[in-house]
Length: 327
Image 1 (tube, helix red, strand yellow):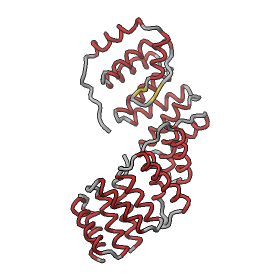
Image 2 (cartoon, one colour):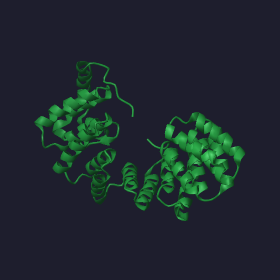
Image 3 (cartoon, helix red, strand yellow):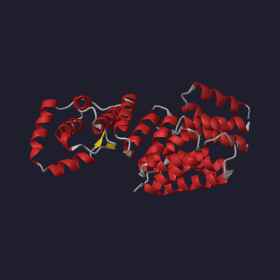
Image 4 (cartoon, one colour):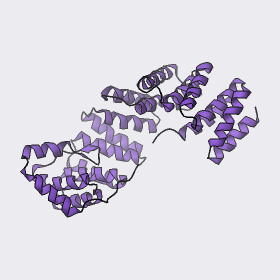
């Protein structure tokens, strides 16, 4: 019973934790946008270079721009800022044909592809960029990120480790490394890089703390390592310090306390999550299953009724119904 219950917990949990909106191409015409670009030509060249070098293409990736391509990149930047991402990609494509050895063009276009959800096209651009400029750590990291998004985690790790060798040490980089190690079930390495992500972040978010903490709930063993549990609970507590009303943080705290064999605190954590969000089906399900283990039929029945009322997945409904019926 306990083993089956734990499998149900993990199945339910995996359905509720973790991660895109689309960007519209409607907006000002390309001619109008480019006319605005021409109006900005009076700014100093130094200012333009600084602006472009710090611009995050696709909202996430900065690229050092070759001086001879500044004007063409300003046009692409203006198109992107106007929401005309596909036009910006086409524009950079024309620039790339005339400058096939310019890695910066491929990087900027790859970042725009990624923001539109075209990870394969983005990975292709970043791959070509690292061939041209193999000593730029940020390009290797971007390639690793695309491969991770494509679920090619072994290949992603190769690119990310190269970025690490080249000295990249940002919060964003350590987070994608943590997620890649996690996907490869290398939990120790993943935990190390979650820790570095939090250290390198100016203001770690509640979501980051919770994501890092849930690492301790994974793995094939029914008994989690005490050290991993303690570290995970510390992360959740830090999340709750920042946002005491985080339903997800309280839910994960319940999961961890359940693994730590703290029944009273476990029930309290699940109930706190449900006070904040009475529609949290996973919390109702876990409360029902845990109450079943504790031999508390009243709590189990009430929680199960709420879980079944909210559950939309037929397989999880059937599994829960079978377990409750055996009590």
